[in-house]
Amino acid sequence: MANQPRDKNWAVNYYSKFGKNMSKVGKKPIVIPEGVTVKLEGETLEVKGKEGVLIVSLLSNTKVEVKEKEIEVTATATTKQAKANWGTMRSLIQNAVSGVNEGFTKELEIQGVGYRAAMEGNTLVLNVGFSHQVKYPAPDNIKIVVEKNNIKVSGFDKHLVGQVASQIRKVKKPEPYKGKGIRYKDEVVVRKEGKKAGTAAA
Image (cartoon, rainbow, N blue to C red):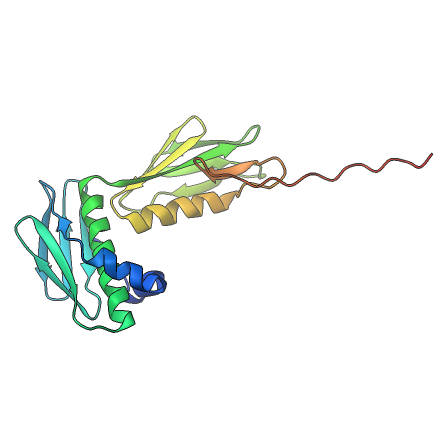
């Protein structure tokens, strides 16, 4: 089942701050891999591949052309916002093409004595120092795999994969003294020095 188009303002707000850099990105054609089909229908782009289907809404002041083996994005105005939308549009389409073709994965690690995770069906069960288990049902089109103390979140929607990984991390953010909690793989946690016990005066 195809994903519903995302609110256009999300993309604009996220990328507009990159302005000029985004326009440079926008100039690059997007190669359509074997097994991926792209269909332009009005103001939406349907991208379909072996991993799934994504719908990308076109942003204002952008034009998308689907050719035999590539997609070209151009700006239809010269304003700063148009340049931002141009690069944003190109990035969103590239993410959609890569997602339905290969998918995306985010990895997390659990650190702490007695901390562990397991899957019960499609629900992630976390034991991370609370008096109760924390259960996180995997959203549609998201796969969660637990291997020892590692959690892998994968799917074809890059934004959704990142969002789910962030929500899992928030269950027990790594604390700054011993580093216990859930962190992204290879994340560096800045440690704080614990309080030292005072010595009695002689």
